[in-house]
Image (cartoon, rainbow, N blue to C red; front, top):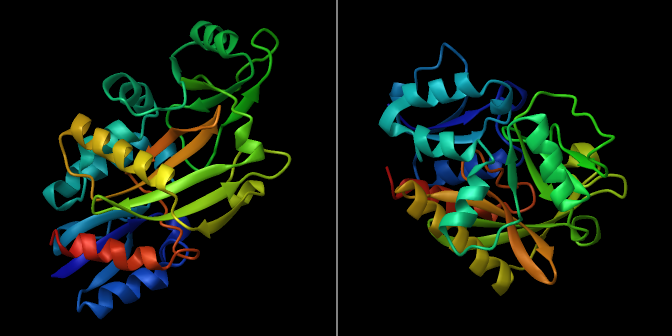
Length: 277
């Protein structure tokens, strides 16, 4: 039996960027680990003591299949299918805002074009995102609700465009084993709001700030309370508005650990996973 199977996608079959640090951290503890593509029919997930979702960054294109796979893995899947069902639909942000005191980016769910136009009219210049989306796919800025036509059929989540996303960028804090362990600041290019490298974004590891660390821990604690399940690892993304950090995402399904920038995250991750074996 293998100790840990790390679920990934075909595009990253060898593991997420910087995966060598994670592989070495497992090996140094005498644990066996292997990366496996989540939809590979020849993988026997039952052979692992624990399954961790890591870089399944194609789930948004086949969400029913992904959730079906997670259901099939069963109790050895860290976090579990219900947490993923909740977290892969960005409507969770509205629940987080309504059920906790965690400050979040204002978000409105839109299930049809009428609701979509109403939400954009409410915010003015808006960021429209697919409710199920990953890697920045499908995100658009809308300046005028009347003249814009969506290219997909929804559903969507609508948020106001925060100017800080282009001026200051996004703050990401990694919370592992209940503790904030590191921070990465990400900036978009001059022509986009998405901070992903494929859209020209850049990222750098920085010293963990007190403000960001506190908000990240509060967000994960609130998520734990909502789900009624322990969150072993998460990445909390934040944007600044009127001088205050707001949560824009609590990523617990497949948060990139940015191991190429923060290789120390590997040791913290393996320590937390080992404690649950």
